Length: 488
Image 1 (cartoon, rainbow, N blue to C red):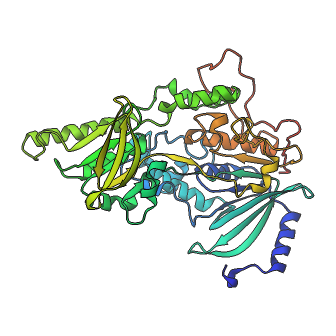
Image 2 (cartoon, rainbow, N blue to C red):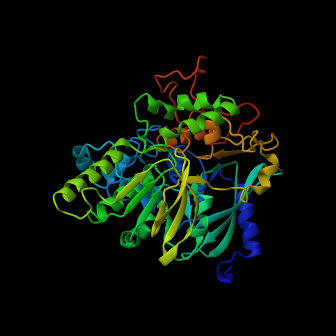
Image 3 (cartoon, rainbow, N blue to C red):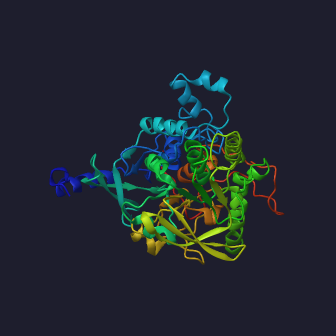
């Protein structure tokens, strides 16, 4: 650690004493869209004292996938605040007004905005909401039983990401919003981790797009929205008849996302409450069967892929290429990559198996894009001191109550909330942007012990179970014995 920026022992002790004397109501770990939503809505709660820490130097939302023209899969109303507080100064429409773009947006008649615009909106919020600290890496969270507060140790980073100073905050409550990390299947990790091998996760796509366009042959693996967008972008940018593209997926088809109006009611608070009330066994059985609600591709993107392929057949049949009437692009579902390695002439070999044909083969390519999704970031190290207090389910996962709190030993009177780490307890809506504002409001209501944000009693026409749903909106107050009320 650089000595010039290091906090001296005396200064650190004095700062810690001052922080403990006037503790924060909430410390947020991570500043992605979900904690940014919480910070924006928290800004509207009078007297609430919050600090949010993020190790990155500034807010960025999936920069590697801000492909030109790619849109969000949720409407613009699913911004950081609107579905909990339409009058918030941090809404997307307020952002447009501040940028003098409200009338152009009105005439554009866009319900789904581009990803790049959503990223710009979130950066605007991150630059205006108070209490956000970028370049701060949280190292540990501990419970101080004597003071009945959480101790949050962090390292302040300089512009190069090097440790510059140490710090500690004290808080009555903590919320984890550390996001997800790119998932690379075990079979492809050796290649993805090897230097100078063109195997990239889709989260890095734009960073390596020119290299991929220059590659002789490219294989895209994964049939979700990211895989479709990457394949379509490469297809549009490669010459007619010389596409040299392959798109593989383990799924049995390049399936459209369930986007019917009643189907979308799985992303309502009503369904979240219903799912949370199911047994662990039933929940675990449901999640894999619901993949088409969130892992498939929107119909417009699939249509765009087909339209582009068809356009190329026209060009080739009119003499615009030498592919014999069909573009050089192969789309194959039902394929699992067993192993992968380097082949001859610096190429790559994918050892695959077709699950329905029960056949194996070897496919060669020059570059690979892994659109294989994301996994929850590990917090074991950061929360190591809290492990003795954590209550877990039969699969050793943390239990999360209906109001998004980790279930802790009663000796801990503070609360640790989670965002996008509760799919096993709250269902497919956990990572969905459309539920961000609602979940933030539930957390704020539970934390303050009052209805800081009124929440709807009903949100879906579907009644998901035979039993009448309990009356009242979730998050009005914490349960008995788990109060985390703050004086605001």
